[in-house]
Picture 1 (cartoon, helix red, strand yellow):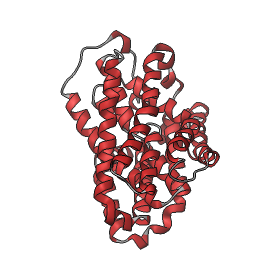
Picture 2 (tube, helix red, strand yellow; picture 1 turned 90 degrees about the vertical axis):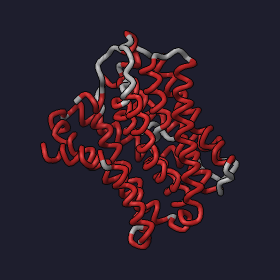
Picture 3 (cartoon, rainbow, N blue to C red; picture 1 turned 120 degrees about the vertical axis):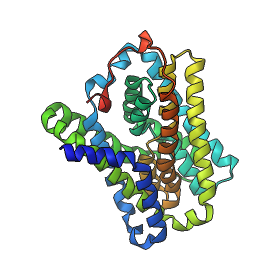
Picture 4 (spheres, rainbow, N blue to C red; picture 1 turned 90 degrees about the horizontal axis):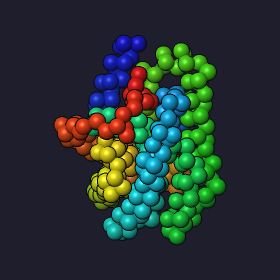
Length: 324
């Protein structure tokens, strides 16, 4: 298991380069991977099962201790990013399928990588884990509603179908993973070191499928989509911090809200786009999955060199996957 743990750390360290290489490979030989699209929801289900296995009831303790910070963070997650995605897509006049992809990314819950980034940034890890967990559990209800509100005028979309998809690929696997953690904790503990490898492999396969299926779109509009994704992500990070500051949260909590708002579950967005729209609609999510790890790492590195004094409001033990 020591070897597996080291392999997981190594892959996590070079995750961005791995995904970039996968995208380049899919672009160079799209025919080899374009048939992978049907597997995208299944790949995400495996990743979400791993997320559920990494959760514990203590991850939700912050709800009782600091409900205001959590409610504020989740509200920002589900307002700032969807509206920002909609605005950027229309500002750059993206084609309808790409605009839908931007909105799907914005309406997705927080990504699990954000917890690591908050830890590295010396932010409020407990708040970060709670935001990721709660936003994920709310996704089956809020994501379809947001997509219907913002996409309905652009392309026809079924809210019921989106709800069903999110329940199948997110809620059921997460709850199953959480149940396994409660029922067979020793077995799950043995599997935790493998989860980073599984997650990286799953996201890499999703990128291969999405890029291969939208190779022509990448070649014609790749630079424009990259610009849209960068504006979306950086805007989310900045506005998330601003919301926390305006509402009087301590600095560590501002950092957590900033990263949680700016980093999305792009794998879910890619899966929904592939199933309900097209591989081209999944392209913003594929690019986002690479870029938000780059920007998150850079921001975490900057904040890690700017420590803040401990605040009694956030003085609680770290929870979730960082407290192993």
